[in-house]
Image 1: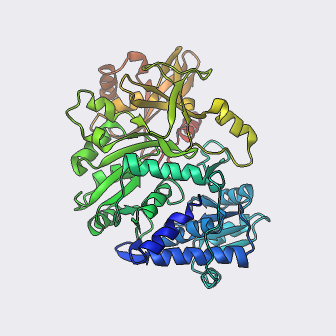
Image 2: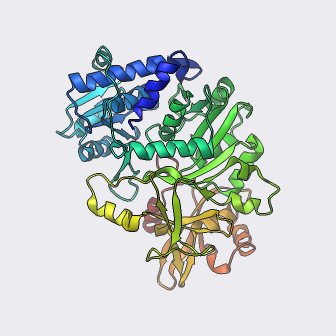
Image 3: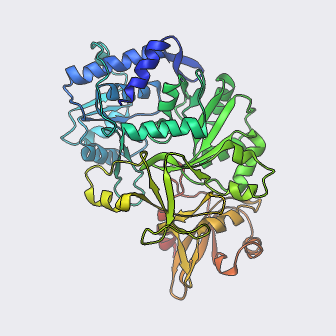
Amino acid sequence: MNLASWLSRSGLSHPYMPAAALGPRVAMTYGELALRAARLAGALRNKLKLEPGDRVAIVAKNSPDFLVLLYGIWHAGLAAVPANAKLHGAELGYILEHSGARVCFASKGLDAEIAPHAPKSLERLIAIGSAEYNALFEADAIDVVSRAGDDLAWLFYTSGTTGKPKGAMLTHRNIAWASHAYGSEVDPVSPGDAILHAAPMSHGSGLYIMQHVARLGVQVVPESGAFEPDEIFALFERWPNVSMFAAPTMIKRLVDSAADGHAANIRTLVWGGAPMYVEDCLKALDRFGPKLAQIYGQGESPMTITTLSKQDIADRDHPRWRERLGSAGRPYACVDVVVADDDGRPLPPGETGEILVGGDVVMKGYWRNDEATAAALRGGYLHTGDVGAFDADGYLTLKDRSKDLIISGGSNIYPREVEEVLLTHPAVREVSVIGRPDAEWGEAVVAYVVGAAPPAELDALCLSSIARFKRPKDYVFVDALPKNNYGKILKTELRARDAQRQ
């Protein structure tokens, strides 16, 4: 059940097929990638004396080396701890200490940021590309170490926007199920198809590596190591049948880009991490055509809760097409998704409650956190903390995180509903709606707006589309909204700024 066996098989059967690319150039074939992973595994076991189940951290910018490290760690029977390379050294130090990682591989430069914060439990901090790193590949290759489906494969640390990050334990079985779900329901992969890693391989984009390895796809990493629309369009031109996972903000940047690129080579643009507003989705469809798919998942149920297919998104003739564009789609075949009340009882279509998920894709639990595990997995379901409702056709619409719900005058107000309306104004580029403590109403609705729309026009727009009590009581115009490294708007930080402003 070791995921490394997928690479080993591909390396044996198709050693000369391209496996990894840096920009427009092939960096490694499947035979080369499999051999490097097997040699690294030999070094980890025989030189560094790591034992099956030990954790090895990867703090790296996107690169072909990320693939070597991930599969070398698995090949040796170890567990990978990929961490966001944009985190502060102190944040990375916490992840290294909490995970108990014995070895950490870091991009050049990042090792110096980590070193002052490295815990005593970390035995080796190795810079990728250094002499010490290169010497590891002189070790003898070893066979793939056998692992059980329930063994830890990936310790997935949440973004930690409201406190210390938690490590979701993803097993070999979890990731295998997620990979099969992606290939069968979102984006079928054929040999030679490419996936472009413009989002961090340490998180969402990296979870699509495995299906492409199993199906002999090409992993393409931008040379810049960043998300630059001009470069992305050039890589769309270079690689055939290419897919990309992106946050909605990244799709929006591509749509707004003046780059001279077309969609002929694009297989699928998959967005996730946050819902895309309907107006933004319409603009993306106009530019790229029927190439868009949406996924909804969490690190605890990796990328796999519901999906809105390319077919649904492109079906303009359906009488509820626009409504479906605002949904997160239908549950994957491999999971059971329930909208439940506070006592965990399923609610009928149309009623709003917390989204619960069950199935073999759901995490094993949180690393070294029994209390959080018990709370998240109570009753046999993952309690997502997200609020939503099914419609009569079985499509799930996300309302908001439960902590983002606004209660004003005893009425529930879901920020996204207000945001969708405000975004229809042509002068509004971005918006985030929060609740502000109010002595009379409990909370008042406040809209933070990037743009230059007159408040009176925004008021009129709201009054023409939603109930009066949902209309913002205040509009605050800003140059930018606070976001994390994955492009998600940080409403917790926005509320803190608003409190300070008041």
